[in-house]
Length: 536
Ligand SMILES: [Zn+2]
Image (cartoon, rainbow, N blue to C red; front, top):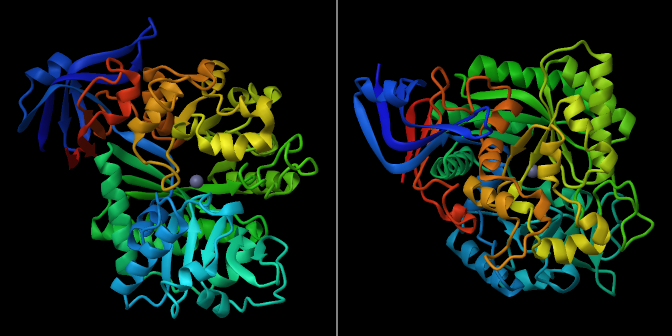
């Protein structure tokens, strides 16, 4: 038995008092992996270790309800291409990495800015100047654009006269030659099929990087939101090697074309995780992409886009097929984790839930709609009625270039200023949970919470859709108890005796600082099941 007392803190328990305020106390006692006492009882107890929190703020550890740890971690193992301001800067970085890694036959990069080149067309020759003899494959931060060099085009068999795929675009120049820009999965599939799987050491480096990063931000639970069969072994190896500082749930990706054939595999993956794992990894969830994203015109819309009046986007699923698929995985006891961006994507997901609740026997379920970007007014009340968790990535709810340059032209003003209705959905009784979607955006919960509370880009403002701002208490709850609810974890998300000792200690009370500085509050400590995973 090891006991730790954290004292001289504002301990934010997450429990609402009848007044609506969240109950706080001043100390918490941890024994092994559980919280055993609060306040005076905790202060009066013997402890092996006493931590003076220096007047800081202690709460249940953050939980990320939607994140891509392996993608994000692997990005760090590839050539750095993120946050650069010019395609030639990207190419130079790729060249430097290639020269430093002669052993790597393929040169990869993830996360370059797809708005850097005119009309989003990136030329193979810019990369050829740096890397002429090995294939280069770079994916943009939108995950819908890929930039390759001539050697990669050659290996994929892409030359003059190449046939266009039905589900993508090989961007050609005026003479019909591939430029080096590939849009959507159908266009880059032939290149990606050639990529060697990263070696186990690279995968472990990726998972270790991700896990340490999350711990440094106060996170002790994560939802890996897109798991392919090969990833299950990666997670089990990571658990066995002891590199995980979080509990991880895996969302197994459902393919609209072959979901019936996948069902047995989902059950096998879940059984394998139970049999081979030690409890740190679970596989309770199945991931659906109801639709795509607004920026690429692939979100599914009830009304056409403004800049493309013939298009209502691209549902990934036939709505009736999605109903059958959600019902099938629900019957097997899995949770449906449904990416939905457009208002038709959201409606399809709600319809699938409604259908499933009607045809399957009742049980305690946690349906989750993720991103929840645009919801038709008629559907707002259905989240609470059907018991669907609305998961948001709060860092997105600000009026930045992503909105002004890429989203508003497609949605038009009315729909643009109806996105991410966090407060409205909460008022209508929906459970709200938060996530980061890292590496799409920062994994730091406090940075997301700052945006949820302010919906501002800068201190000068103005707030975007100010009626959709939420209180700091509500934002903290969405990143703690909201995700615990989503995950079906009854012993997490609150600071109370008997709960799992997943805790975060931050330097200041986020309710007491200028809201525009919440994201800068230092994280001083993180605990996962009573084990200190980060010391700031
Ligand atoms: Zn995602």
